[in-house]
Image (tube, rainbow, N blue to C red; front, side):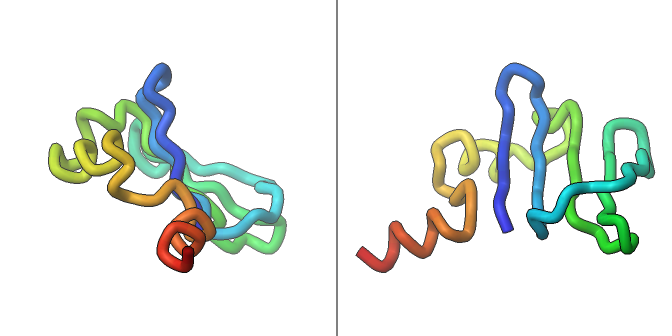
Amino acid sequence: MRFHYDKKKDAFYLRFDERPYAESDEVEEGVILDYSRDRKLIGIEILNASQRLSPAFRAQLLRRKIPLSVEESILRHSG
């Protein structure tokens, strides 16, 4: 699992699985779910994230207090 925040696009993406997505569904304006070929949820994209995410979460993300990926977190804490 990994997170990604694009400051320029103000988009937050949470990826559960690295399989390619086959289909996307905008369930609410600016909230897009990505599905694999077998209809498993593999990602969530949130547009206009700075207006949708809590201020505390955004602050932690921007200060990199929240790891951008699980692997990054494991490496940071195992060394």
